[in-house]
Length: 194
Image 1 (cartoon, helix red, strand yellow):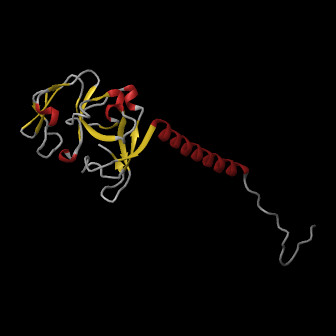
Image 2: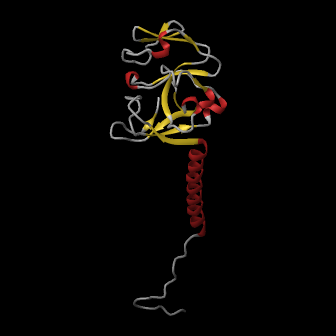
């Protein structure tokens, strides 16, 4: 019969860490690290981070607001009406990125008369533009060629866009991508761009 010890026993058997639980925890940590790395690579390999310059896109986007651009989307599809795109005017790499909204796509007729935008003779009121003070080159009806897009800023009277002769209709190969996410700024919150 074994002798029973009385009092404190400092030599009790220590609990060992279960190796299955440790493996499970390490696998979760590994998956999280890999996911963060892949997200980082995707954003920087297929995306572009830039900022809005000027007040031309208010109230959708504000001056100085950081935006994320999907550069991959227009490799597999074409810009659509109401997309907010980032482009270099005339492909000039010595200028900043312009951020504007597509209002007309290839083959369409564009005209600004009496301060209102018409596409194919139909008044466009899906986006509430102010009365357009300067129709620019769109005073006369323009027919967009293949791969040409007509873009306007949401704050149309404070925007240099396709109405200007030095920008005019933009070509698809000068479009870098579609704005899909905006960072928080003093005037606007964080979120997806519509």
